[in-house]
Length: 103
Image (cartoon, rainbow, N blue to C red; front, side):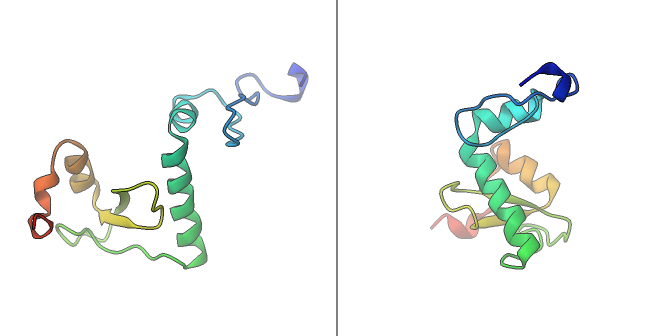
């Protein structure tokens, strides 16, 4: 593709994984490096939009402002709903937040 068809920095970046990411940003780099995680994220977005999936409240504190967390990216619609604080804590070694699952 010629340079005149795309503004600087928006040229398609070949990824080889079918993701068709058109930029070379830190976010696009993460998506190319983690295609399974990115596809799981997209599946959740689509399911929320179609009503197939509904957000819950934080599993730890009940806060309604939540992010989806995947314990297993091969099951993209199985998510844990966690507020930003508890999602960050989980990614920083907070597995002890779910004592009811330690059986």
